[in-house]
Length: 391
Image (cartoon, rainbow, N blue to C red; front, side, top):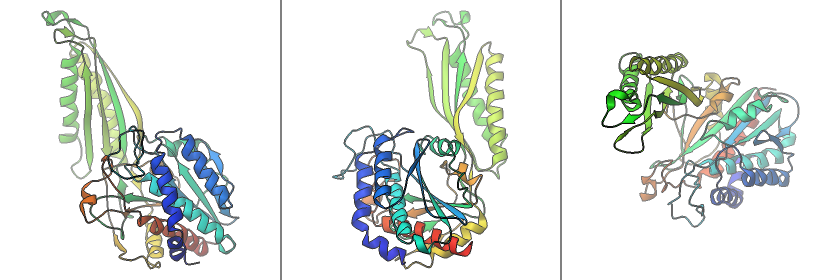
């Protein structure tokens, strides 16, 4: 089967699926409408979907090697200002990162591979996951048996990209880190409250929090190897209720991002040591905790090169590869990539005109739907070709 031609013929269906997800955006782990829609469509396409934790899996083919194809489905907790007629109407959720496109592409890839099932040289396993934005979905599905029965031998995922670059570019990295790690932290500082006129009777948690903040910046400036990419951002510092009251507590929240496992481990350890030590020096205490995190996403070199070769076989207009891309954003596909030889790529889906003025996570962002048949065809073609080469 020519998967690209077939995907083009299914453009209206692709668009319909994508716009359903977009209008009915859901966030987090529990996505009842999205999950039900995916399972219903898979049944219509002749597959037998199963719940896997809060996500959905299904397979086509039987026996032989198994390749996993993944799409995330969750939106962001924000209002949409795209002006599109199918924009999410709630004012509280928006598909501003393109996951609606991912889910639609994987649904069509499942349909294509089901239609071509007799020709498959093994098994394709589909992973429709929630909660990528909170780094919970992949781990949830893995804990419920995603990587078992059958166990994947390889895994592939695509992520669309907005902005000024039209459809055609694909970006990848098989030589180093593709996506940074992320660790979201919270440091609760405990002091002793007092009247603002008598600071000597207090243990000021705001003072402690400010000194912790300054010290955390030195972890990057003076303790991180300049050859590593390390980021530490405190995005929230909350304390107090009035101008003349020294409070009991203050809270700092932020993220650590790195491109190396060793750097990640060191920064997380030192954050705890520094915050506890500084609080003690000023007579208070600090409780650092890591709310959630994800490791760096490192793709398998050989598998990535193989996938690029397969993609070049399809007659996608204006297709052009850009290697060695590293992004300081994160993706919880990293949990899969730690256990299975994997490839993760970006597919451009921007506009050269004013619609390309906004990037992902902006309330006005738009994605070119012409990427949908491209992504669906790449998923199906690469899976089929890899199985044929790895019988």
